[in-house]
Length: 131
Image (tube, rainbow, N blue to C red; front, side, top):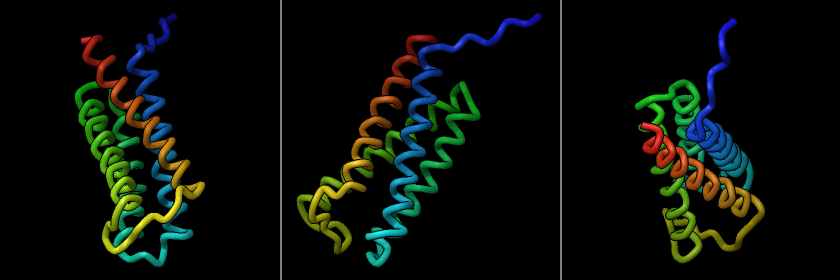
């Protein structure tokens, strides 16, 4: 009888990061289908965010070693880019678009993105400690 594989703290954080990234991508896809569809550049970027979040999640799920670390770094880049873009669109104009209020979709995306940043950062720190 073989022993079941042991989960490390980095594995749990990796699973949380996958969930937050998929949630982030899903929210961006929903916003593309809804209120942001008519906005030319922003709507395209929202679709790209959803596709990238899915691809990064797949890479995080499929690997436990260096590929997962690269995927986590990519996830941080994607998510931090989305957060910076949101901040710019709230304070100013980004690609001819201004986010007028913190709509429900924006708030949900913000929570998912902050969760992703925390989980991805935690995964990277835990992975470094386990080495």
